[in-house]
Image (cartoon, rainbow, N blue to C red; front, side, top):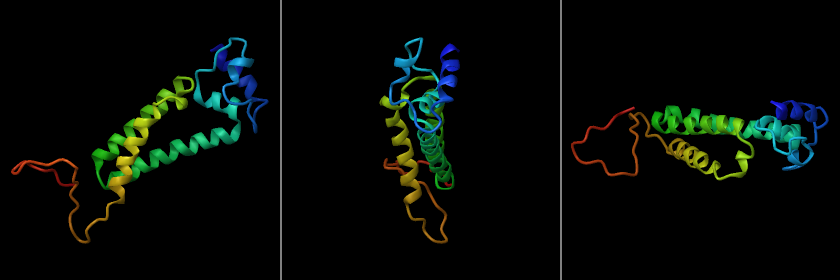
Length: 142
């Protein structure tokens, strides 16, 4: 809680331009980064960095939501991974610098691939996957 209060005090001086990447721990009395990604980005990067983070998370969520009309399974995968990443990033410091973004990008890529496929005109769309389905195996139609 002390780190959050300290970050709120620093954010008063860093509205537009932040103090620089990974500099919070050097000016903090605790010597540690704040465990809140929004406050950390605001103090280290400023308002534009925080807006960028918000736009990136929003675009990833919108891609996942858009995939719902094409394949609900892929959309659920992408949305659950994006939301999990956002929740984890809010409670962990420097989550954006780790390899935790790789599963997010993979899940969102599936949503982009399913949305980019052309739909046949006047035909019911059936989700197909890159696996071979045995003959006689019941397939689910959307």
